[in-house]
Image 1: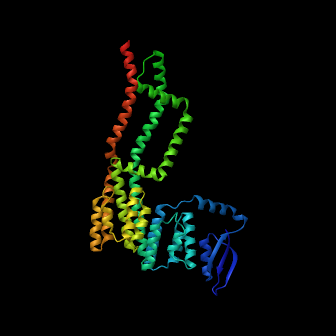
Image 2: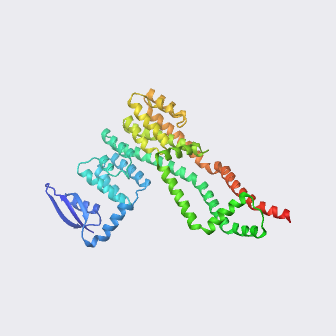
Image 3: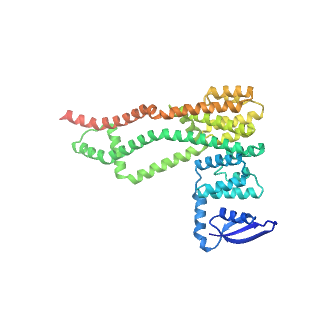
Amino acid sequence: MKYKYKAIKKGGEIYEDFADAKSEEDLYRLLKEKEETLVFAELNGKSNLLEKVLSIFTKLFGRVKEEDKINFANNLGSMIEAGLAVSRALDVMSRQTKNKKFKEVISNINNSLRKGQTLSSGLEAYPDIFSSIFVSMVRSGEESGNLGGSLKLVANQLDKAYKLKRKIKGAMIYPAIILSAMVVVGALMLIFIVPTLSATFEELKVELPKSTQFIIFISNLLKDHLINTLLVISLVCSAFIYWKRTNSGKKLFHKLVLKIPIIGTLVIETNTARTARTLSSLLTSGVEIVRATEITEEVIQNVHFKEVIKEAGKKVQGGATLSEIFKSYENLYPPLINEMMAVGEETGQLPELLMRVAVFYEEDIDEKTKNMSTIIEPFLMVIIGTVVGFFAISMITPMYSLSNSI
């Protein structure tokens, strides 16, 4: 590929030129061998139109996975702790990663580093990839002189959060599959089986109960107006999603989720673990407590938990302690977290005790998600039994009436 580039010669002279190289990293190494520093490079020429199109497509639609970010933070931290310069370590990471978008991002961060910027400033330019907690912990590492340690702490934080998210999603797969199968089977019965029974009832002029009339109405709707029905369902779902994203909708929906048996407990423990681990990691890295609460607020998803943390950040500025604030919200955060906070504040071991809280609830969530299928099975059986029972009674009752009249 042909590149147009700008570089600085050994004597300090800046110049522009063209060169053939496999990649921007390859060009950087070629110039380094001549003791020159690459400042800027871009693909050049009509022959590289395809590469440019692919590059634009990668920027727009490429995605950096959580595993990539975890490996990046962990490996970069290890190399820095081993004595490699940050720029050299980033060069190794750029060559190592297989994700094209991430490779380009790392190269750009490395270029900004060579221009005198800090690593945290380079990461901050990509908020869609590197979260506030990532940038803040790296910045604290730079300020404290323990960048390698901070990066490994970031990797641990991301890894735990990622694993927790996977466990929750994994626990939801079983009920989702069962309910989806039930909906599909129900729809097929309404479209293909109910019309046959309905025709029989009409032919024999059987008086139908309200439940049977309701099922036949739904069946006719799906059979005769399938496209319109699907369109209405899509519009209703879209309206629900829109409503759920509004402030009032989000508050009500998140409140209802907390009231669902089993799921509500899981949400409370997940948010508690996430709050404790995030605060602990940030405080351990040296982030001051008010800023730590602001970043933690961004990490938490449930709006009610976010409000507690936001209030905590404001009141801590006024001299209050975290434990006092969290104690007022025991309907959301369990008593254990504010008790451990109180002990941590008294002993000066707040980060350590918050980490213990995080580990405790993460282990509890791990056990619950392992047994989720066993726990949720009775509820699914009740739902399936109710639906099947309603359908069976609605269809059998007219037949029973017919047999009695003969």
